Length: 150
Image (cartoon, rainbow, N blue to C red):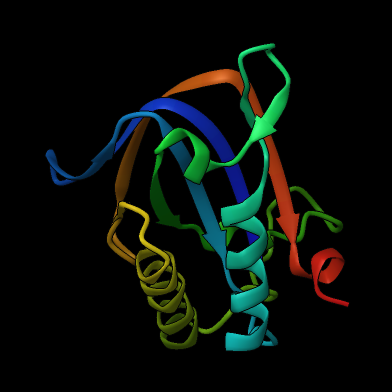
């Protein structure tokens, strides 16, 4: 499982010209799922995500978590996080999870974040989405379960 996390002042996602999710201050998270991922891996990734101290404290140090700043999450499914660009110029997506499995884990991640008391908005799995954001920093982090879950 891979998360690309962007600290944002605001972010939104639209489908067919209609905004379906939006947040103010918080984290925009792109979620990629592999077939080898499971709920145990998702739980560890959500735990790491919700505890990351990537918000500035009064001294400008990144010491605060999203809970400390009262932020929200905008979760977007993105199978292209598993693009394999080693051969040729056209990416292969064979490493990405099967759509039905990826959607199940994506929905699970959203649910688990909500169960922890965080406001969470999301995109529409498999839809053509337009994502807008005002990056804060910019501050972008990649979490990969191959490194987080050993």
